Image (cartoon, rainbow, N blue to C red):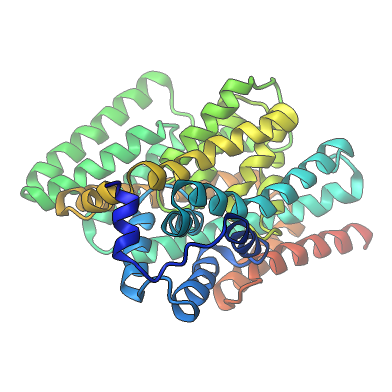
Length: 409
């Protein structure tokens, strides 16, 4: 008997809805997906657990815990999982597509308008987008604080985050940083801290040697120079798909981890878009009812037009489908093993450092005048002192209005 069939037998309350009704249910969820992952997950819990009792609260919490450990947008992965419970693999695909489709269509349309009418180059609109970019910088800073406050719970996790921050600024590959962070914390929990300290020291020495031999050049300064430049090369379609797939596989800790990965591929290495364009895409995604990671559609559109948008988005979301479709039950058992869990805690701490390094690079490339600094300060205050479902789109829309008024007056 398949794992999906066993799971469905274990949860007899899950209705076997028609495929059309299942798709429309999760399409509706996608149309209402404002407010980020916390609000999206709360919406799923309210309807599927509290109102219709598809599963128990304990079952929901266990599934959520697993998807919070895995890379990718956990709200989307939960939709795929509930579609699997209801109608097997076909239901999983329909539920996942339904949830992501509204955000994808809207982001695709905004990307087309942005490219078609050159929205980043017009005088008034350029000021508006500069204000939006400052609000996005505040959003990323807030994300570092919120994620870090839940993750950095002891001295070693702080050390890992600090090391990842330095590695990000120096351009170390994400996979290397994440693996090192996971291994250090695994050694802390599995052996004595002295072994972990030796390995951490070896990582620091290696980083120092590589930095010395290649020349000390902060990635933040590179982005600052590229902030207003145009794209310098075209991206191939296979490269766009592989960039999306890498992002989907390495985005531990949610959508914010996708920011440095795609930023590196699109702005630094591939150079198919400017830093300012990248932040414009982030700002546009914040206006939509969708996981923040849908900004990958914009990145793909700038790099390869409509087909590039489709392929990069497919690459990002493919792992989120595959984890449930292929191996939900074995992964659930594996990821809750104490040794594996310790490794993933270290990975998550490294994620915080990587996002913090990205926040630094964004600040260098964004805060270039009194107007952008003012927007950043006001947006940061709003993100820290208010917590409503529509806060992100309200702040970004407010920043756009502020930029428009600044241009007029």
